[in-house]
Length: 540
Image 1: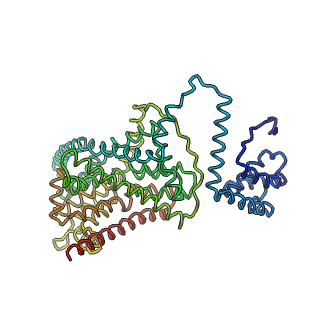
Image 2: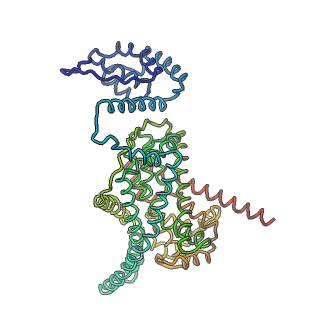
Image 3: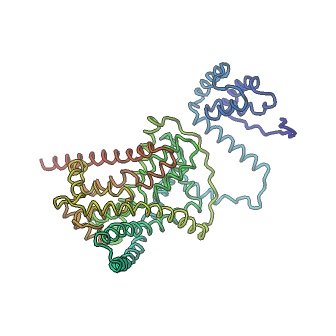
């Protein structure tokens, strides 16, 4: 029995494994001598924290109890003995130790619950457990997760085409009205061209291409969240992220990044460890956001899907190719997370206890409100704010000429030798750079450059787009490298600004810019080298 103020308590002591209990008995007498008598009830918990080794918690305990747990000689000697004993029991690090504690606590909590609680319906959670035996199993968990993602992306790909076309037609109709208004107000031609061909065209392109996929993807993503499946995804991927020395919660923020990398960066707030939060922030752009999907889908459809099959089969093949790109992004997320954990952000993964909520019937109204207003319109608003200046800059590059050569062509010619090493060309690389404000405008800039137009080119026919690209030297190698660089290049300006706000320094935004870009350049160069080597061997 312990007395805390006027309250007398008789807590149920959690009985750990014999090895852990022996270690507690070794150090608990010393702790009882060091702490005030009225805090004796904390001794056992302090022993566990010392064995855990979390310096942040130990510093907090030392400050509150006015003792120095980390520098006390008696405690340090006992901890050396304890660590050796735990190591002999195959409890070799803090991660395994925490798992032992959590599993024991959960098991004893379940035992207490079964002994003290009664339910009107004894098998109230049997259905959930049977479902989880499949959805979280080692054999079926990850394949089912991939299947769900594949279905979501396919629905997004197919479903977004129609509203995108409708919005494009609406904006074309409104464009004629704006032109008439500006001419009526006697605006000079150059100003009308900047406002219409530059700002308006870029802005409406971003909205028509970005809004429909987001309006489909985010509600479906929120539906899985409301259903209770997203925590199961985190559970399935937890082991992978722990091996990468990062948090299992990063799986959730990574999934949010599929909709928008900026939203994924904000979602990293759920990660408690500052080190693991930074890792999640810096690697969030390694999965393709909603802005990169249309480009990936178009290139996959033109150069792979359409050449292998037609109709429905073509869309399935295109979806599978995009899925492979996504899996590569997930692999790169884990690889770079591991690399960061071993270099500039050294550390071991913190303990992560995830409570799997019961499966629920989704509330469709709340799902739509949360996804449309909290996510879709929020992200679209940021994209619009950067699309306006981007439209002005693109117009200037395309329409200002020196000796009848546009600034765009000068930049492209300068970058062309380096781009060739990546299996690209100067115009493609220039388009990615000018597409920094929004990934949605990369393809229109490429088409504008090839067609020598002064405005963004909006083509809906994949066959026509494919013909233009092929006429300008695109091959299967070009398409592969473009898809790789679309996956692995710098985040958009909205995401970079969000990283600065969340991480508190432009330094981390610069690192987030550099990491995927370097990976993309290196991977494209390797792919090009292997392709050219294979072609050389075949021609011998």
